[in-house]
Length: 132
Image (tube, rainbow, N blue to C red):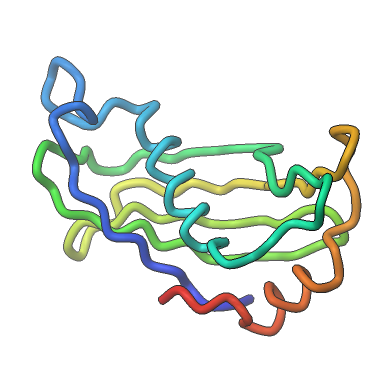
């Protein structure tokens, strides 16, 4: 739907398990950093929480290892009234090592799902986020 946002990341020792590969749970943390960077510059209205994870699915294809320099490519697949679907690819060289499909919901005051505010929606749908 919109641009792909690239987030470079270097795998550190603390990202790996006893076998020397990236621990499966770390992918979620790295993906969160990439999403935060993608949304940097969008201000949430006072009292709103913003976007939170609603659903998450990860497919692991190739292991990442210590000192790998990767890029997390985040693409907005669909934007609905209150939800946004993203695809996040973990890329090392020419290999796609993992793909995360995620749905995030917009949460307003009172911890309730609400419509994505118009000013945020326009930035998302008109390419107003400038982080390539």
